[in-house]
Image 1 (cartoon, one colour):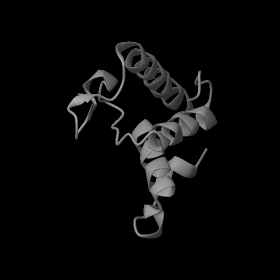
Image 2 (image 1 turned 45 degrees about the horizontal axis):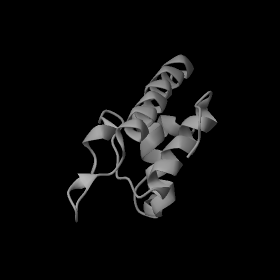
Image 3 (image 1 turned 120 degrees about the vertical axis):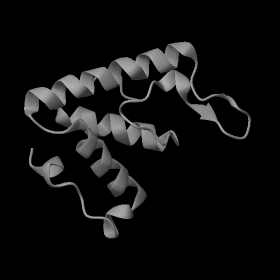
Image 4 (image 1 turned 180 degrees about the vertical axis):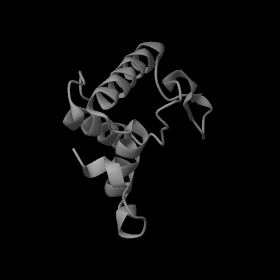
Length: 97
């Protein structure tokens, strides 16, 4: 897991790290809400969830400053990391910066 988010490359790296953890995430969701379906236990400890929430908040700020859509960036990362980009077109503004 990355430890900070400072630019668009870091935003993408954070999305990739979440996917590598096996998290099917949405940028608006609180990481404290994620559970492991089989056990119904939290996916993250309180500390881990709080840390990921702070990184996601930083993603929103960076994307707003760069005038790109955080949802499109994260969707692009998801599509590429899962191989779904072969079937679903990438969002238009996600690769402009």
